[in-house]
Length: 90
Image (cartoon, rainbow, N blue to C red):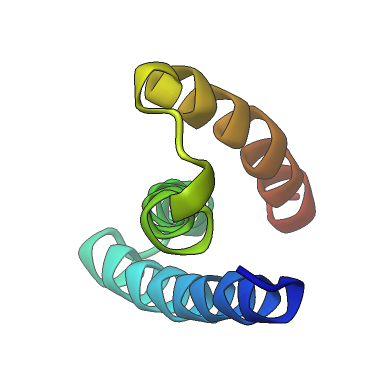
């Protein structure tokens, strides 16, 4: 797969993740009004899982290691989750 195609897939998953995060945040804010920090954290978690699945099955499909899927999920959560939480939550 060419670098340009992979870059496009990466950005497509990211843009879909942005929509998922906004939708999840709206839903969680509706379910628990006034608890915006909890809603933000929950929306980030949903988005992290969405992006991980999207990247594993779409962006990086040709580089997948099935045996280490849980390890990959933990690394993805630690790196992307930490950046997202620090960037969004006060």
